[in-house]
Image (tube, rainbow, N blue to C red; front, side, top):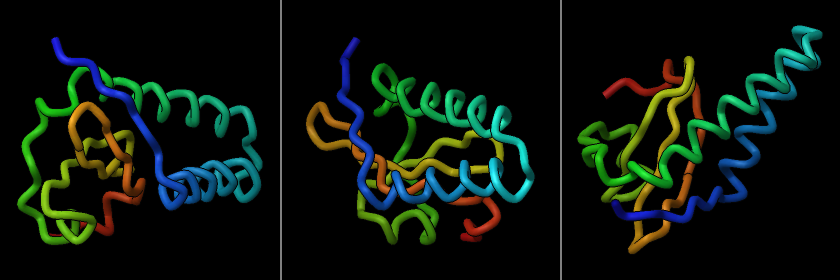
Length: 101
């Protein structure tokens, strides 16, 4: 089985920070935010073993991040990534409601 290295871009890190900050400060639920962050990173790290098992997306809202972009879902978020050699590059983590076509 091929192993991949997962790299999170600064833009995706900012997306993650905004979601966790929102849960912690707006909903006043810091423990929930911490659990959410742990689950999200577990989903990201699952790509170490299965990155290319996901098909390249045909949705234009995902393809705007790159030609060979793929996505997985964590809760109500879409994790958008691409694979280059043995590296998974997480491009964005956005609400699924923003993905239309």
